[in-house]
Length: 173
Image 1 (tube, rainbow, N blue to C red):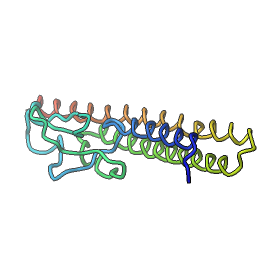
Image 2 (cartoon, rainbow, N blue to C red):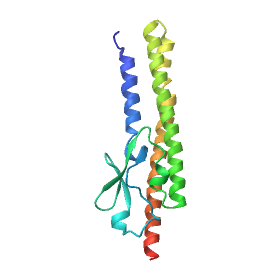
Image 3 (cartoon, rainbow, N blue to C red):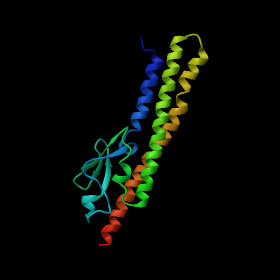
Image 4 (cartoon, rainbow, N blue to C red):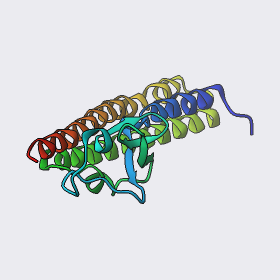
């Protein structure tokens, strides 16, 4: 079976939309063997502050020790990984919700585009089906992008609140 240009377009656009949303700030952090907690033993900011690094995940301290990586199916570690305060945990939960919603919209948009493309290739006479096949996936991919952006913002804020709690614990010593 020969792939139609429309099918190739939907797959490329959908995957690029989905993969661009999978940058570290838009994907769930997966806990590694080393966990992070602002409430554990005293720790200097340079050694314990966390940050997001593209391609590496969630890293800790000036040395950049990886404490969490990013993946599509890893969503259970966010609270335990950066739950240094109530605010950090709340933003981590918001992140999980928004990322999940964005993922559902992305997959649905890709499925709609693929289904419409297959239907169009089976019946080449219907111009209305062609227009629907081109436009319908965007009804899902645009909201997906919105949810992925909100997830990215929430994860960034969760990391910020984690580090803020770390500074507070250090200053109270």
